[in-house]
Length: 294
Figure 1 (cartoon, rainbow, N blue to C red):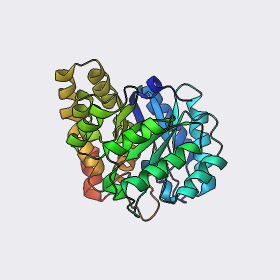
Figure 2: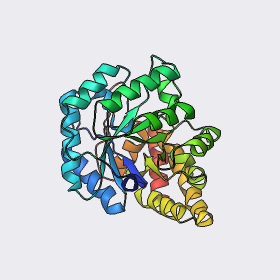
Figure 3: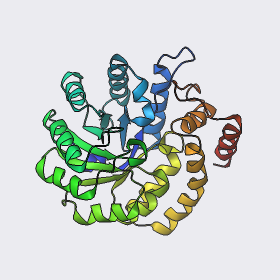
């Protein structure tokens, strides 16, 4: 099982690079994985939203996960995204995927069908029972249309031994404060909002699963390391430098922005799978100017 302390600090939500033909670009994925590891990230997250998992086949998901584990060479923990709005399908994935080398599962709140708090509780209870891996919940109401509330998170943490943390991306600081106030002592709360991470670390979160760490790795690591030791004045300077870049990454949706940045850094092709498309020329130019400023 994953150890809580292994998943603190800076986690990176890895993109899935594609070739112009549309196939997964494994050499680029290896280059990216090497880049973020050398940059100093603390753990890797494969098959998250940033990895365009809705457009990956089951076979591709397994291949991408196995590749990330292989490229990490055992140097860093690997978290695997397995979630969805069909509970039985999520359970089947957990039972059939080869999860050797995976330290924890990141499972998103069911999207589109808008379950009640009781529905989300029952969903995650069944998901947790289907695996011996630690499970990190993922709350991102802006994408899912459902908000996993602190009381439900705490109920799950208390009732399911292997639900050990959450990636909290509600963007609601009041909700984050409430969760941190009532959570069990050893329950891990990670930020899922790059633009709020400094404030969230200041109120007691222990790390981030970051999109920006793909391309602004050095700066994100500096920000997180300063925050961890309470040097918030210095961290504020780094955050102020990062904020314009983070805004650019999300201006036309994720991962279009981060793929544009990584393309300009020579890591991967600027290719997404429909329904996602590359950013506009104007935004690509702004991202390029920002990269030069770093």
